[in-house]
Amino acid sequence: MIRTSNLTKVYRTEEIETTALNEVSIEINAGEFVSIMGPSGCGKSTLLNILGLIDNPSGGEYHFLEEEVAGYSERQRSNLRKHNIGFIFQSFNLIDELSVYENIELPMLYTKVPSKERKTRVEELLEKMNMMHRRNHFPQQLSGGQQQRVAVARAIVNKPKLILADEPTGNLDSSNGDDVMKTLAQLNNEGTTIIMVTHSPYCAEFGNRIIRLLDGQVVTENLVSQHHV
Image (cartoon, rainbow, N blue to C red; front, side):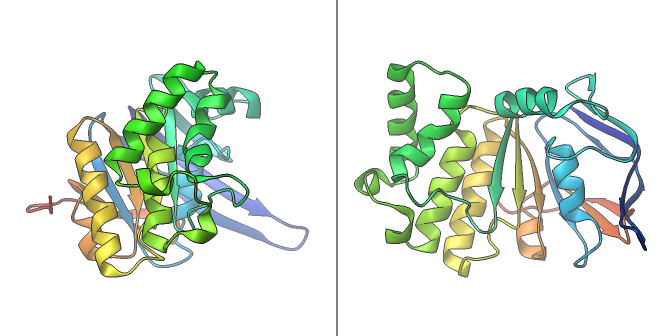
C-alpha cells in the first residue's frame, strides 16, 4: 500500500536549513497496524503529514496505492486523500460550531455521498461509538474521551483504506485512551490499515510493527511479538 524510498524533507528559511526527514525508506502493506515512535522533533509528524498527502517531500519517492504521489499538486493530493485516508489527531480537531452528528457527517459532504446514505452511516457510527445520546451536542459539551470517539467516527465514516493517527491518546486519561486503542485495533482487525505516531510504548504494542525514528532517520524496525488486542 505504501512504499517510500529515500524520502527527504528539508525546511529552509533565509538563515537556516533544517532536515526533518533524511532518506527514509519504509514499506507498509495493506492491513498492517504500524506504530511510529521516537523523541520529539525526530520527524514523526512530518512523516505522517507526507504519508497523509498533506505535505510534499523535498526529495525521494512515495508510492501510495501503486501511484507515485511525491510530486502531486495540492488538488491531486486532496482528491486522493479525501477518498482514501482518515485522520485522528491528539487535539481532536472537531469543529466547535457543528454538532456531533454534523462533525461525523462532514467528510461525506466533500465526497458527495447521497443524503440517505450519509444518515445511515452516521447513525451506525453513533451506535458503534456509544454516542447516539450525544448526537445533537456540541464538542465543548463533551468529555475528552467522547470528543475523541467522535473524531474516530469522523475519520472512518468514508470507509478509508488508511487511518493516520497522531498521538490519538495524548490528551486522554488511561481509561479513555485504552478505549480509543481498542477501537483502532478492532478497525485494523476489520481490514483497515493504520499508521500511528505515539510516545507510549503500551499504545505502540497494539500494532504489529514498530518503526523508530531518530534525527529524521529510521533507526530500528521491530515486529511486536505479543501485541495488545
